[in-house]
Image 1 (cartoon, rainbow, N blue to C red):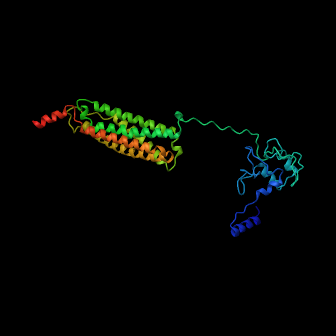
Image 2 (image 1 turned 90 degrees about the vertical axis):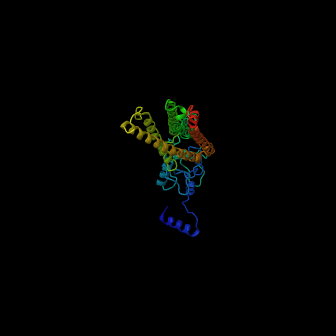
Image 3 (image 1 turned 120 degrees about the vertical axis):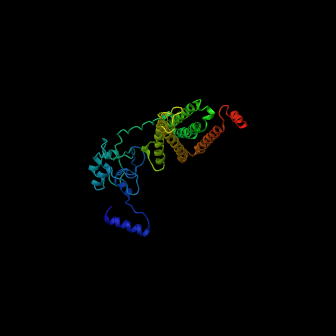
Length: 336
């Protein structure tokens, strides 16, 4: 567009508040069948010399034909007619219905059907659309993330709280100190919780929720979940490789007793904070899931509340359950 024309357009826009653009439709009559050109997809192309062909108001970059048309002074010349701008083996005249290069502006082209695009090589085979890769387990990402949430809720709403309750209040009811049944129960529940955590983490990764898809909506949840997995592993290793228990009757001030007491305090405090953190992590995950799949948020929230309720009841029952034979023994002691 010339400076004078640009200035005129600006003046019109200011005075009339109306858009002004170069009329590319005015070029259509300057080539044969200018209004009948279609692309490789069979759709009409109103701006034959541009990519994309139908971008208002000023078109995109020029395609090979657009460049040649401009070089020819925006007129249909014999040289332009005989040229194969797009390199598909057919001259521009052949593609636009003027194989003999005799057409003049305002006349009727030799052919008005089977018009092809002089700026696009439609003979180049279009790469086939790759078949969609079936999602893992035959499930879509929404279903996989739902399973991820269920696994995490099972871990942090049920198995881990119950495992902690066994260690805190169920020892007497399970025969401690004569019987180590409580420890086996605690260990199995914590191991099962770890299985749920690792399964949930794997499901999240398989659903495409890795750090490559980071954004400020889901990113903090992903980063927090990654640290949860690391701390879960550390907590489990801490339990499996715990310091030796002091021998029966050993001095509580001995080095072995002190080391064991420090480890036990750290293990319990870390477990408490990790449990609280992950309950909030589960709730935050439900909220994020609801942004895309709102129909399951009530289900997941209800599941979390029910499991936490079961864990609380399990804790209370363990606290109130006397050791085997303990109730009768207590009564005898009181009577005596």
